[in-house]
Structure formats: C-alpha cells, structure tokens
Length: 115
Length: 114
Image (cartoon, rainbow over all chains, first blue to last red; front, side, top):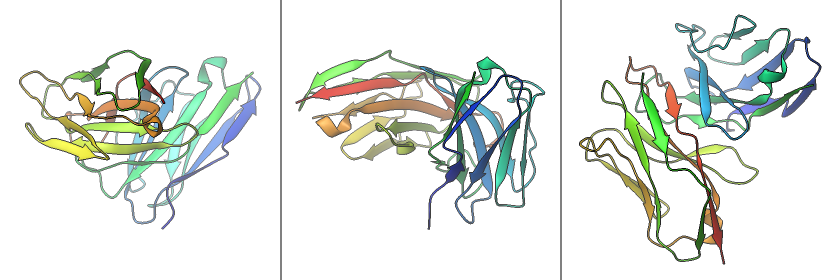
C-alpha cells in the first residue's frame, strides 16, 4: 500500500501562532514516531506511540509541544505559541511493531518556518 | 545516554572511487545499527541494518559490519556512482528498552562527480 504521508508539506506561520502537523502511517503499523530535523543537523527524536499510547514524552522540547494518535491510525503533532527555534522539518515514521530491530518507514516531512 | 558520531562531510568523490563513511557509537546496551539515506528531494529511507555484533548489513553495493569491539558501523562501497550522491545517516536503536527510538548521527553529505 501507500507509504507514510504527512501534511502539510510546507507550513509558514507567524511567531506565537499554533500549528498542527499530521501523519498518516502505513496501514497496519502499530508503532509511530516523530522526529525533528533542524537545518544542517541530524534527526532529533520527539515522541513515539504504541497504538494510541505514548509512554515516553520526555523527548518533546517543551510543554508547547503535544501529540496524539487515534487508534493505530493518524497522529497529529501540535505546537502551541510557535517560536522561531521551532523552525525545522518534522518527520514521522512508522513500523510494524515497537521493536529495536524493526525498520522505520519515514514520511516526506513537513517543513515548518516560523517568521 | 546513547550517541552516534559520524565523520563530517561533505565527501566528494569521483565516479568508481571507493567510499568509506565512518560511524562510531556509544551505548549502554546492545542496540541495532542502521544506515539511512536521503536522496535529493526525497524522504529518508533505510539503506541497511545489523541487529547484533558481527552482523553485516548490505544493500545496493553498500555494506557495513557491526563491530562491537570498536563500537563502529562504517559504511563502505567499492565503486560509487553519481546516483549515490545523497546524505547518509548512521543511527542506533536506543538500548534503553526496546522502544524502537532511533538516535541519529549528524549526517554525511556525499557528492559523486562524473
């Protein structure tokens, strides 16, 4: 079937506004991950879901960030009161199960620019 | 905590040259190791992986061996092509509890010239 999809592909917003980023994982994948890639840097882990449960939220940069997932389907990452340092590409990945050995399949990302 | 260190780029090679991109890691447990590649204008995709010591991952002419004694997972290819131009990321699965969480290196840009 289709791969991981993300929307929007690009988002430009003003400082202080809230944004919602969406991820549609591969059908049947129980595990879902969010990462952030700042310009010229590696990927930074944010949060993972097993089903609709997020056991560890310690990777979220601040309490302005939150994420939820509906069942084993769509996930949304919400950033409230955006700041310029939030500008990055936000990547979503999914895998069949939550396991260290399993391959993660990445979406194309959402490029967020905060003016 | 666990971490990954990659050689800095960019790496510029001529077509058919030999490629090595160094990757070393620190981990408290026994992580799985991965190389992901990001071609221009495309998303991140798995290139190869190794899940235990001495395993060799290989794909598309690339290979890497999980060396526990030197905590390394260097990427090699015997003869690169222009189409191999991309950003390469070394990653490990966080050994803290089978969550699948990946820790990435900074990425190495490879440019292959004809």
